[in-house]
Length: 163
Image 1: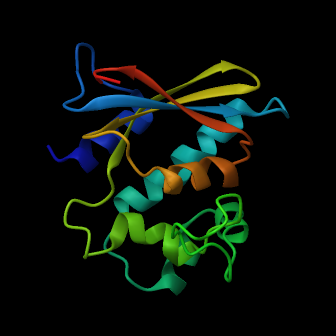
Image 2 (image 1 turned 135 degrees about the vertical axis):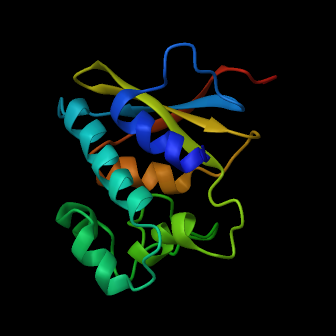
């Protein structure tokens, strides 16, 4: 299986019993002060399901019809282009965000893959991702969680890393 096909399965069911990541696990702890951690989790998964199944699309207009309306609306047409100089709090351009998934220039695609998530309590969501190295760029994941309704996000090491 490819990392993407494993990832699609983990979105719905989590890792298989005994399944171990081949890389390190890293975590984003998402604050959801409105008590909507379950909604944030579901929204993140909804967007990723569409992207992982529909990666072959190249036309931005088509993406706007298949992605959830709330995500398309949250992604500013003139906002953050996903580069280091941009304001990390600014909404991402949809095209910039999608480039982390469908850009043919990225031979191995993005540096993280969804491993599992869990709602710790109504205001806290844990999102675990598998990565090959640390540090890793996770701004695209940060934007997804922010657009889904999370506020403060912090990264934490879980296991499988020297740091």
